[in-house]
Image (cartoon, rainbow, N blue to C red; front, side, top):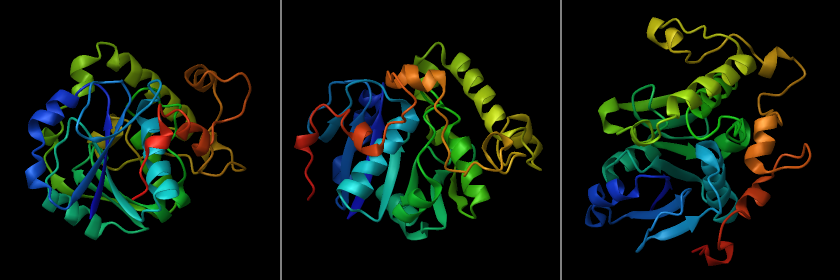
Length: 256
């Protein structure tokens, strides 16, 4: 059985139109909705508020690995349609040392296969990358520093519709802010690919977050904007258990 977790935000109507259930007989689809969209006929988990792409990925990993005890999963988004045979290939090529994406860079984490041991090794996605964008660049850097490969099936970037770029009028402001944060955390890009380096893509120059040798690559700082996003009154970062409690109806989750 393929365990497919879809992070939804503003484009479920597009996904519903393109996703034909009859073509996925061996797939169990679970949807984590960040926007309280009207979604029916699916196994659904809805958050009380938008916790962003990084927060959504972390919640998916908690549900999949800690609550359901799964070993490997597919994480996708509603603006990228993946075929069942492609998911089978992603899972086959994914292991604890390899994250396998569908689309060639820079959208290889638009839909990807992730192993539980990889998530344990690399840690949570950095929720200081607000809304969406750059959480994948941060994660790739940490994988790079810990010997975890990011590979992909080489599918065209046109497979990703870029829903947030079309709907969110302020997305480019968000991208700019997130890129500033990534540069503070990891320094400048040292990629030998000119297109990657000019776009600020990993690998980056720092070997440790904020160039501080005492910090582990899993380190996620408690910034002012993190406090604002999570409505925190102190410097305590939410655990995955606490993130899980953001669900509207956690009792409704079925472990089977």
